[in-house]
Length: 382
Length: 141
Image 1 (cartoon, rainbow over the protein chains, first blue to last red):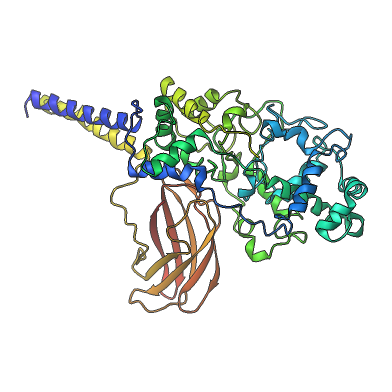
Image 2 (cartoon, chains in turn brown, orange):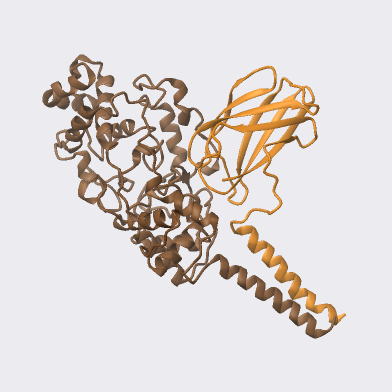
């Protein structure tokens, strides 16, 4: 082997590797999608969102009268300890049913970011830690949380009995005071859930693009930079691993090394959530659920132990994410740019084990990812 | 001897390339995706039948797991099924469990849900008259 051949071999290997790296992190957005990429793009389109899944644990989930009652309860500040806090105080309808601040504020300040509502009917778990397994069980939690509504089930049912007795009777067959307290309280949640089920995301510019290319049509709905971001999102950025499907969430829980907030108590995330939902009397297997036990598969087959649960938080939907700063479960990150930098750098988790691997994205690539995320914006969920 | 020094950067580059590829999203090219084959020590033939075909991402469903002896005769066995994503280092998002079985080696496994696209591995541990053995399967979602 002479020296020329040796140099040529090394150079050829280096060139091949460089080409491989460039191919996996595209810089030219005039991309031709592979079949696999097209499949992933199509899988993210809102056009693929199925009909609202039934909630067998809530017999009135699809009763329009329940939704009308639930909507009134959602906005009623009398459902609170100080008469000033309604569900809508933090879940603001004109702000995607969230509040735009790091930590939710009811009667006091909570320890978590207020979550949006659109599309949550599709999720088997509610809250950042999944400590409720239905929208109606979720709706009951804040009512009795001292830092949120600061009320209690007795007072809540009295408010409903005094102001909505006939509507309640029309939906549930009896007035609140005629039912055992916990049953009446559960029904309050079921009415609110019937309203919340109706809140779903609307199509975005990304969906226009996805639907076009999925049917073989050209589309100029996205810019070159946004397409570069999309390519990273479904490829080298690994984003689509968790942010998958038409709602851009796998409805599961992940430790992504999000930093702890110094002044808040330790937050174990899903590890704490599983213990709460298992003993929640309002869960799918509880006596106030309308479901047959055999359909409560999420709770029955729930992963309830393991390091993967420690500081794992629910994957949020990315639909309309650009209008929902600050980000993460306690609003730790002020901008999408901060979030993308976090995922690129993949810092160690403050507790448990982060699932992230460093991506070492260039600034140009990070900007492209942010640009792509903005294409998921739409009209307000309704 | 110095003539072989060129091998050092070349080997490093190749090794680096392999390591780079391993952290990226392409699974090994030679994976066996068949859902019916012999267990590791050859004691059992294990056949998986997904309750939904093609296997969906994100939807809870049940699978049928059929266990026979190596000759294809039904066996009365107990199974445990587990799995995960080797490239991501995490397991299944659920804890699947046998919800029904007969004496001919047919098991219904509930709680199967895959929350991500990509390469999944399923491991079935079989305890039967021929002893304990494991069958491993690959899925591409």
